[in-house]
Amino acid sequence: MKVIKRRDFLGLSTGATAAFFLSQCGKIALTNRPGSALAQAQTYRSEGGVLRVDLEAIPQSVPLGGQSTNLLTYNGLVPGPRLEASPGDTVQIHFTNRLNQPTNLHYHGLHIPPTGTGDNVFLAIPPGESHTYEFQIPIDHSAGTFWYHPHYHGLTAEQLFGGLAGLFIVRGDLDEIPEIKAAPEAFLVLKDFGRDRRGNIPNPGHMAQMTGRIGDLLSVNGQINPTLPISPRGLLRLRVLNASSSRFFRLSLEGHPFELIATDGGAIAAPITVPAAVLAPGERVELLVQGNQSPGSYRLLNHPFNPAQGMMGHGGMMGGPGQAQNQGRAEAIATLTYGGTVDEMPMPSQLIPVEPLPEPQTVRQFTLSHGHGGVFMINGQTFDHQRVDTQVTLNTVEDWEIINRGMMTHPFHIHVNKFQVISRNNQPVADAAWKDVVSLSPGERVRIRIPFRDYPGKTVYHCHVLDHEDRGMMGVLDIQPV
Ligand code: C2O
Ligand code: CU
Ligand code: CU
Image (cartoon, rainbow, N blue to C red):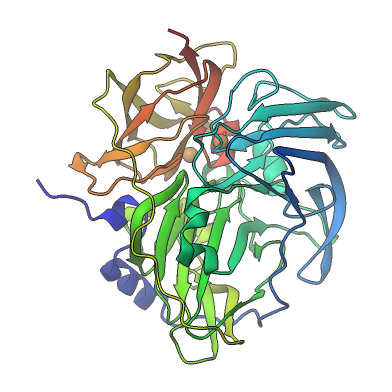
């Protein structure tokens, strides 16, 4: 049996596909001149084992590419403040809703209780009201790049598209590896925006029924094509989040391959060299870049991605429902610039082993499909928060086989517990990594292995193209105590 190369499994294109892909794009448009230096969000860190933050969701006019734009913000910022904690810390987030519609908070990727004041997405916080989230990051939580965003069913896509999202970093063992500790970090929150002449977010057009809402302003930390410094002979650690409602990113950096060090759920066992990285909505990667080129400017490019073809095809000429994301040319979303001096910084050779999972006790199937009138389904049903779709037992391991019978790529996401991808289209996946989002191109079949640990209660799984989720592609998972 043919073993899938690890980079396919990790959602990263192989050299051959990247080369094909780049040649398809031919001339690369130089639309954006490099702008100001990449800004880093206001950061709140835990002190004495407690992270205490006041967070307010509030509409605000924000300058975006030099033009004021009416967005939805956390504390007036896009992206929202970065939160940083360590395993064992207590988190207290005093949240106030200043929007004119209900909202709530979801802690994407964190392994915390889905109930009470934890990662409770069934909660509705009405306009003008507050809620204090309080939970503990378990002592054995992995270090990684996680995030928070609204999760009120029916309004999730709209609220994320408006700008509501922020990073939640858990610092731990990965950050203590000497080579990694020495590398400067850059946090890149990727997000597309739409804007009409008055600076408002336009209503999603008809196309958005299939693709989800897509904007043509590509921002990194709310900036258009910022610059990113690297030192010759140095290393740069990129922590990348795709916080878009529906847009996929396919990234490459001129003259520099990426060294992948972490996926959604944290570190992999050893760095893997990849020419490009694909991020579905909700996905994260951590990448090291080596400053081993001659000083100059190198563009971080986003290449077209057609969600109607997904990873199976890279053509840009077909049109179809993916057209909005697929103008057939790459665009610079940031620019790497050389400067400063450092002593030679070596690459780490080992990272953190990925724990092998035991054989599953149960195997289930989940079929993703579309219905008439822009309805999206899992196992033939649209979301109903009062129905339990899947009941599992705490402290068991299950395999879920997900089958995409739709016409679009669907990134499948599960809350609270992370998983490993076991096979894709019946071919075993070679290298283990922790994920919480896995993308399926039309026609694909993926098997994931999930340990349900520590926390009983109800939560959800869904497609992370958030218009699909809002239109029904979500199910209720009930984790039953033993
Ligand atoms: Cu980032 Cu349920 O989602
Ligand atoms: Cu999530
Ligand atoms: Cu979907």
